Length: 437
Image 1: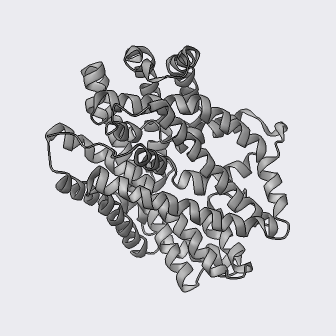
Image 2: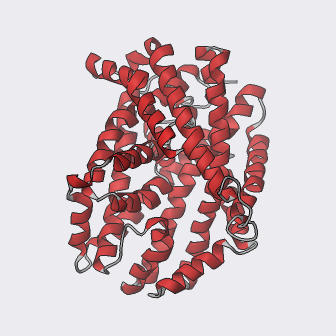
């Protein structure tokens, strides 16, 4: 049976951009940028993305296309059985991430419902904090929204590459950019909004410190979804006729554009109302509703904002689920439908204790972390960096002659990427791994 392929280059680019544009770009980027001084962090972040980040993105997609199969099979067929552990680790990492990520995705559904019924429309920060805490600690509501989010992801992936992921991406990604532009226009036209724009774009290089660079490195790799094998899976469906370098430049540029647009959406709005964009992860759920409550037609903008978060989280979840199901489909020749249902059932079940770790299981801790935080830490701080190191070393030392012809621009670019994969990226990712442990 012939392997499915993307029907068009634009379909691959939009789907891959959707994989990279998730809650990392919309939710995490603005507050991490604010906590690290704004413009200076943005410059460092962009430099990392367009050197280390783009090299690792190229590596993953090139491996997938060269092998024409998922992560486990790709590393085994191109490098031998001993390299397949990178693929197994990537599938495990993707499964763990999707299990707790779907809980957060469920929160976006829960808050979209609260925006529709008006419960988030208040100026009282204590009331908003109470609303959030009551919701995430509820014994069953976040489990229901977690299940609904998993079901939405299933409905996209089950129809395959062209009829499922590609078709959905061609709808969801334009919708995401339209929603962002609506919110940006409203945000930058608020009184005092330009102070927020300056905070985002004006660099203060005194803020450049070692911890800031570590944050930029970590966010860059997280934002481009490199290390687990999601992009490798998408690359395995890519036609040999597609110019890989052009496609990767488009994916990277659109991902970075989304992050900057997210900053322009949030920084001016919170500056206009004297709020703090560096208020941390709670910015999305406990600070932004105050902004919406001050706006004419604020409920419309609240609904638009949480719809935006739902779209962004879905496009990333789809790539994680594809990473998981491609393994049994390739290795055991199982049917996509049965594999997708089984994988989603397991993701839902494993996500339940992660959801309950803010409620009835909040007292249950291992290594000082609740279940949700332990899953997050083990996947994003350990498995993902190790996967990134493995991918870089495999590309730079094992298969570089096989893929270097894909870099059509110049020999210097090819040489630079080779040594980024061989030495620079592994060392820097290892530094992040050790620093975070």
